[in-house]
Length: 224
Image 1: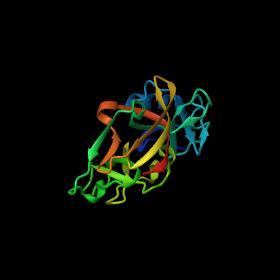
Image 2: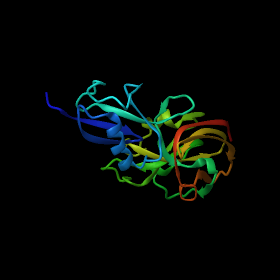
Image 3: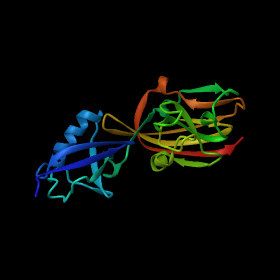
Image 4: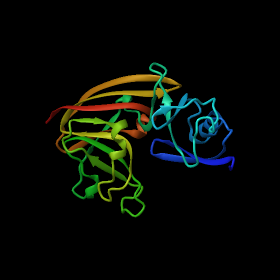
């Protein structure tokens, strides 16, 4: 049997492939991943079909097969579990912009009342490719970014959209989240409203910068 296999590490909305030896430990592969992906300062866990893997064991010992997909999560030191992180605007800083609507805005940049997810279209053939698009939740009152991120698509081409920040229109809302910084889990809570009929209120990625989120739950408490 060939001693070499190809495995794939899956994280955020990305995938990295690695050529490995069957007798290589998962921790060895993990170190390569950390250097290449910018996760050097994080304690990671690796999951196969939802089961946390023992990094000290070899790929052969864990029966990891050729072209297996392994999910990467940030280790939660409190629960011992692993969550799939996502790079997102650090909304815990509560730095936002109120941007006026334009009658010339394309359809893929139209917000609805309530929660709006703002991101980048990754549909190569789409006219909005690599542009900012808005995915309106259309008066949906609850949203879990980590659990629902794979459902977010470009409103024009229905292909993958990489979420970047949140916007709100004519609603009162609450946000509960957890971010990971310097190998620590930091919880945060926000409560505010967006009541300007002529503009969308969104968290500014330029002022706030990015963070690694392991939880972001949004609730609209009232539509205005």
